Image 1 (cartoon, helix red, strand yellow):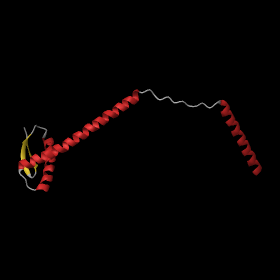
Image 2 (cartoon, rainbow, N blue to C red; image 1 turned 135 degrees about the vertical axis):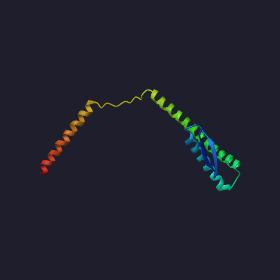
Image 3 (spheres, rainbow, N blue to C red; image 1 turned 90 degrees about the vertical axis):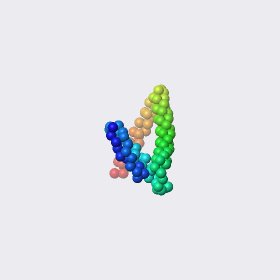
Length: 127
C-alpha cells in the first residue's frame, strides 16, 4: 500500500492509500489545504487538530451546498423529462387551413391579367 506525503496548512502528513489512488488523495488534500490556507489567513497559526477540523467542516459545508444544488437540478431534469414525455405522448395538434374557393382565385387571375394589359397599354402610349 503506497504512502503519500500531503501538505495541509503548511504541515506535512504521510497517508497510506490504495495503489492507483494517489492522484485522488492528492486532489482531496489540495482541497483541504485550500481551506486550511483560508483559515491561516483569517486566524493565523492554530493547532493542527483544530485547523483540520475547521477545514474539514468548511469542505463539508461546501459539499452539502453542492449536494443540495445537485438534488434541485435532478428534480428539474426529472420535471423536464416528464414534460418532454408528455409532449411526445400527446396527439399532434390539428391545424386547419382555409381553402380558397376556385371562383376567388379565378377572379384574382382575371384582375391580374387586366392590370397587366392596362400596364402594357400605358407603356405603349408613353413610348
